[in-house]
Each structure stands twice: as C-alpha cells, then as structure tokens.
Length: 252
Image (cartoon, rainbow, N blue to C red; front, side, top):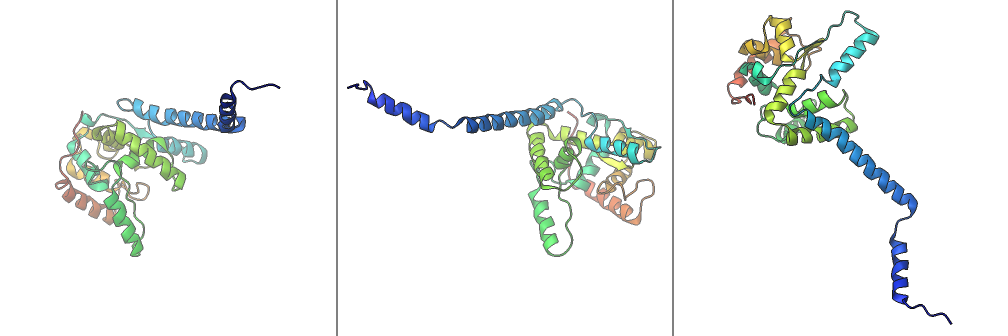
C-alpha cells in the first residue's frame, strides 16, 4: 500500500491548479494588458512630447487638405504659421477666452455649469448648443477627427484629461490659437492676422481679435472678410466680455 507522504501538499497543489486560469483566458488577459499598454503609449507619449514642442498642425488641417486634393477646389491653399503665445497680442488671448470659454482658467477641462445650462436649454426647446471648453477643442482638433459619435466623445474626454494633467493653461491656449480655424484654409491667429488684416498676431487690436473670435463657432458659415450682422453683433458682445473675463494666460 502506497502512502502519500504529504497529503496536505497534494491538496494545495490541486487547489492551485483549479484556481489557475485556463490557457485561453491567460492569453486573453495578456492581449488586453498589451492593448492597454499600447493605448497608453500612443496617447500619453504624444501629449507629453507636445508639452513644449509642436504640434505639427492638426487632424482637421490634414483632412481639409486631403479633401481639397480629392474633391477640390484645386486652388485650395492651407494657410498656417504657428507662433508662440508671446507673439500673440493680449487682445487675441482675451477674445477667444471671452468668446469660447470664460471659465477657462477655473475649470479642469470640463465646464459642468455650461453643460448643465446647455441641457436645460435643450429641454426647454431652445436647441442643443455646444458646451465644449478650449481644452476639449484642442483635444478634438489636434488628436481626433470631426464627428459626434460616442467613441469620439469618449476619446475627446480622455485626451482632455491628459492635456489638463500635462500641459499648463498657457500651453493649451497657445495651441488652440495656433490650430483654430478662422476661414477656408486659414488656421491660427498668425495666418488669420496676415490674411485678413495684413498684420501679425502680435499687432491684433481688440476689435480685430473680437472679429476673429466671432467666427469661431462656425468658420465655414461665418466670415471675417464679409461679416454678417450676426457676426458684428457677436463681435460687439465679445468686446464687452473681454473686459470682464480677467487677464488671459501669459506666456511662459
């Protein structure tokens, strides 16, 4: 008769074998872990690298250029010349904050007051208006694509959190002013200043900066060169708001 010298050890080994996941499940967990590491690398690293350098344009610029090559117009010109925040007038910085995100310096990427107001107005039948912050718009323009899917909104939220964690407010505003669209093929305040006013971003006056900011909600339909009555009214409103939002972020 054979006697097991360590019955408790055998039972423990059997228990460990039962607890050990099958090979297929182990492969699945390894694949998920690898996918998570890859995603973090592909999202966090570019944002971290752009803390001080770049970005080399935006996905919206690339899509506009590609669309023109395929569908026209053939005379499409992409106007873009990035500059530092120090090369932008204080009026340019104040105008976009007043127009797009007046709580920019106080929130951490998401303006929940604006979101709540937009939802209440929508429920009251006033239509659904946007409540995106400047940080969200940078996340969308630089790293993502146009659209309104839940996937894109989820990615936008993730990149917004990364921007707020890794970039300063001054850096976020600097990139926004360099990638915002002000007309067909016109991106950034430097290109817009040269194209519309014959000057530079540093020489933008408060009236000129407010006019540029007035078309930001929809630069395809609102025009700097031929401003409608609505654009002029919005320009005047932005000028009044610029004095009340406080000083914009200064250059680093």
